[in-house]
Length: 367
Image 1 (cartoon, one colour):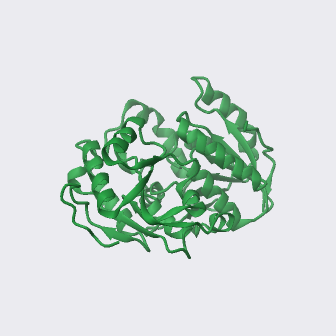
Image 2 (cartoon, rainbow, N blue to C red; image 1 turned 135 degrees about the vertical axis):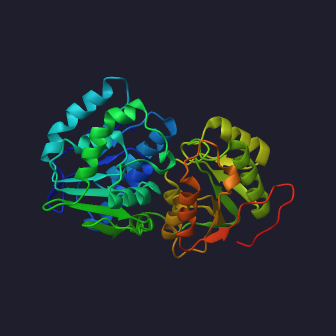
């Protein structure tokens, strides 16, 4: 499948709409937003493609699904060399200035923040980018600078300082004022709502309509996380935790996060015996399509909020294992433990597991 440019004049409920996505989950949630707001109407999805092969592969599959739904997709090699950003932004200026509504998956993205300084759209929508949405809403409510939770508290580098004026301008654009509407479309728990921001619930109705119900197997499946890759959790501690969970609960498959390194996954396969699965779609769609284990084991992540919604009406149980503070690296943000605990504590319809025992002396815990 070769991506093709779309018509930037498409409309959704009578409005010129551009959606910018950089990950498969963001694209999924744009489809959910479109389904909830104006089923059957059109919009243009602009994929700001990353370089990571796994992410690109999932994005291509999601782009196929978007086209099957009747939406236009414009694929941009936004990171394909030093001149790529200038070419991409230059090619989008006209569409940005014509757009009445901008939908974005990652307000922390420097690319998106730069595009926000160009558009004149008075209707801005932020769709879920996982747990980052919780932090975005909190920072917006408190008037803080936009920074990802795992970097919170770290010293700003030269690039951060250089980009600070653009980030500040983006934050102002994402603050509602007269004649400018800001919506957050999310399945995540949002407790501190910024003044004037509209919160709309994402219940994964498109996913449930499009896929399933799944065939459910007797065993357990495990969901991987990129907490090691982001420098939050120690690699050896993570491997021991996965091994303990797998043995305690009889897990057979490990669904890798798209950002997990090949080296780590190889080690997991060798030392735990788990079958490593590299999904070609976001896990919500994989689980809904099936087959899927009767129990899904996860560490604190977006899926502990989204999977129960995608799998509502099935007998699948989602269980989440807390992150032991001893697993955190010395470089982890001071806010990491509190944030991860909040992700777990606010999840609905999941079973809580304490930090997993050492695999040599497992203490079974009911799921």
